[in-house]
Amino acid sequence: MERKSASGKPQVSLLYDRKVRSIAIQTLLCVVILFLVYAAATNAVDNLARAKIASGFGFWNNIAGFDISQTLIEYSSSASTYGQAFWVGLWNTLLVGAIGIVGATVIGFIVGIARLSRNLLVRRAASGYVEIVRNIPLLLQLLFWYNAVLKALPEMSNSLVVVGAYLNNRGLFLPKPAFGDGIGQVLIALAVGIAAAIAWRWFANRRQAATGKRPPVLLVTLVLVFGPAILAFMIMNVQVHFDLPQSGRFNIRGGLEVLPEFAALTFGLVIYTAAFIAEAVRAGISSVSRGQTEAALALGLRPRFILRLVVVPQAMRVIIPPLTNQYLNLVKNSTLAVAIGYPDLVQVFTGTVLNLTGQAVEVVAITMAVYLTISLTTSLLMNWYNARIALVER
Image 1 (cartoon, rainbow, N blue to C red):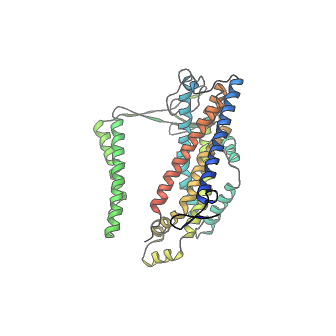
Image 2: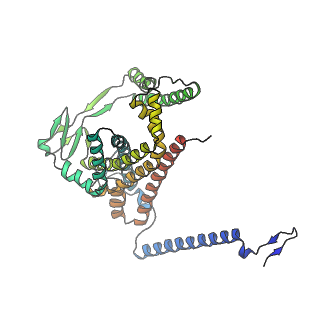
Image 3: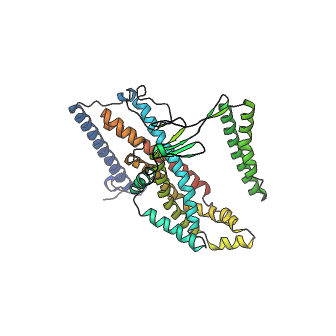
């Protein structure tokens, strides 16, 4: 029953007030969720105590006691801790993810553009690549690259030797550069040059938007990026020598080793993800009106400039959202490294460390938090770029 207030407006009972009801339902739902989380946590703690399994993160500083085949940071089985093993696995995961994203993007854009080529052979080859790769499970492709391609290479005694590099079924061994004193200043000069190049590109874009004239970008960028670094290299007189791999009786010593597991995982992720990126690129280019190309031709632009300056910039608004999904999928798909023995975060931390410590809850929670952070960071950067290139309505 409605009542009238002093102002004459009808008063609705709180029971029938839509806003009050919505707040009450949401509050009740939050209470239920918190209760379920509390009950699950309490149950887990009780079960761990009953099984006499310690909980907490005290294991983090205990000596690991196991070797890792690829380490980008200093690590020793006799002196390093489980925490250091975590960082080794994380860096290995980030390395595969970074190389995979760059490689898949380059190949995906090339194949996507080739799918729209006027050349029948190029178009059919690109279409065949996409259809074949997309419809074969990634795990099978990783096993193919690892067992059928890389493990089929010659034994160490019959290694292929090219310009001081050794290739066999144990991996690729390359000369490893070693720099003397002063390399830190060179890296600082390189960073300053990159920052200056970014600032110059921003200035060139603003000038083009204001006057219609674009200052030279490529040549100035190259000078700004490499000029200060080369100058610092010469002034500091940095010494460079190469640690060449040496073939021994049972193994190869020295040099830079590229594991077959790393190569198989990277090849598989790049080729598989590039097929999906190619479809996103093809769809994005197809979404651009043909009138844009005809207008560019009428202005006298050459076809290669039309694609780079007219079509692709407009297609990026359609390409970026699915491209973001593929970047996220690539990082998450890298967890299949455990199938071929590559020491990524899952294999090292969720596998070996979990088995040695028995800290399942803590280890899995940390691993989930890491992948969540990587995914959210990638999404944030791609969403920022997508907003930056979005069409601004007037």
